[in-house]
View 1 (cartoon, rainbow, N blue to C red):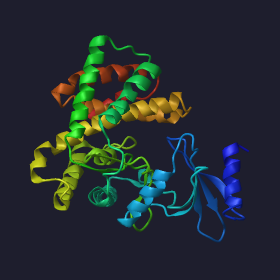
View 2: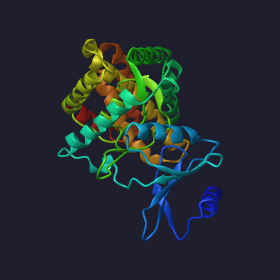
View 3: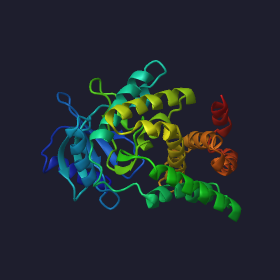
View 4: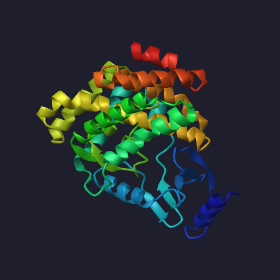
Amino acid sequence: MPQRLQALQQWLDGPLALRDYALTPASGDASFRRYFRLSWPDRQSRIAMDAPPAQENCAPFVAIAETLQQIGIRTPTIYAADLPQGFLLLEDLGATLYLDQLTSENADRLYGDALGALMTMQACAPHQQLPPYDRALLLQEMGLFRDWLVERLLQIRLPPSEQQQLAKSFELLIDNARAQPQCFVHRDYHARNLMVTGGHNPGVLDFQDAVSGPVTYDLVSLLRDCYIRWPRQQVEKWAMGYYQLALHSGLLRQEHEADFLRWFDLMGVQRHLKASGIFARLHLRDNKPDYLKDIPRTLGYIQEISAIYPPLHPLAAITEQVAARLDALGGGSWAEERKRVNE
């Protein structure tokens, strides 16, 4: 038995005195965290989180879960914690992800719930003490695209002129993020981290990396999801519905309307540069090749938006080169994604 799993079971059996449970993997994760479901025939199941302290810190999860619950957000109740070992015993919110349930018929309802919860977090959750989504972090995230996808996975060596163009694009995207009102940012608010719970939707997971940052970040994470794509017109309709909510809450002001969709679009480019690099890193470093299939979607978002804004046209050209190499290596169907972009 692996050492971490043995230590987890010793914690469950010893200090928590749990008995007669079946322990099974509950879900995968893009981090070092692992989740296990504890099941009994005659009682509600629980989730055990294993977050190795050398790579993960459970303290933010505990603190932010409490904060979000206080403002009415559905997060897992924490029944027990051993922070030095990196173990938590959590409420089980079920196994039904938004990603598994979303259809064109129910998307308005499910996204309506998710946008309402997002607005509550942004308007009510304190953010001033959270780490800032500052220039250094934004730049570091976008660097993952260059370092892990372009250079390491695809072995592309950009000439100095294209490196300069990429750096200019990064600076434009940083300026866009920092120009926006700042608020609580979940940072991974998408269909794999939202649960359909049958009552108080959505159940919200994976919030431990929250920061104080730009108002459109979580919105674009949700509506231009790395794992599911919707038509641009529909996305903009949902985004403007959110804008109206933000006006009523005081998070945004009327004068922000002229900039809002640009903020949203460019924030999405920043996020998808980051995501494409993370997916490449998950494959190369963590032996999780399944994430490769999601790279064409992230590149498609970058290509689509970069083509609309002239200062990002050089980034669109670099993305085209990256996508062509990815297709040549069999890393994803860029041709199919581009067809969807152009529809």
